[in-house]
Image (cartoon, rainbow, N blue to C red; front, side):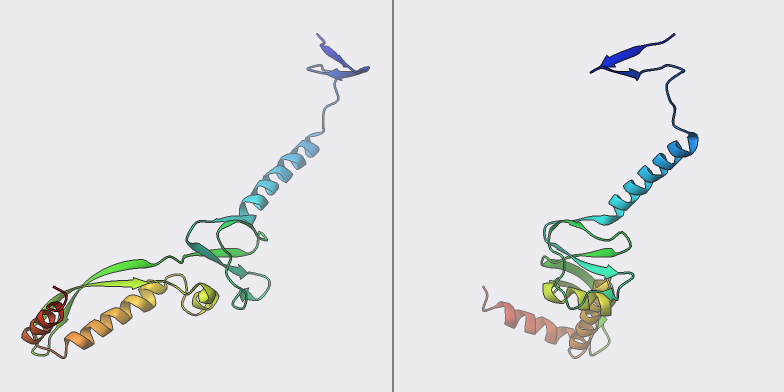
Length: 171
């Protein structure tokens, strides 16, 4: 059984045992190359969203780019062996509840709100010196230490009176 198509004076086989077949090793090579191409493209493309910036880490060429500005928003193509670490550069808020001791040893419950925003131009240095988890390794411990230090100087009565004094002019 044979089916043939005639296209512009030449013949093309469509399901015929006499049609030329690629050898198995060539088909395997084509499949392997296709898989490698897909992996290469997926490792090389990065999408940086709105309010974000990316710090480039060059695996084979010097590590974190500290001197160059971070990569801005949008679609980026990088070498597949490099990596981009994405940071949120919008202003963010962290709410922290903590228990601290007053000067007379009584436990005081605090709810602290902190606004922070990483410096866009220093993201490379931030990544190199503090890392992606800088919020938990630097900022929150510092806020806790300052809160304990400030509250520990006062009695609960003094804190309450100072809060009334501070809030009166805002009424």
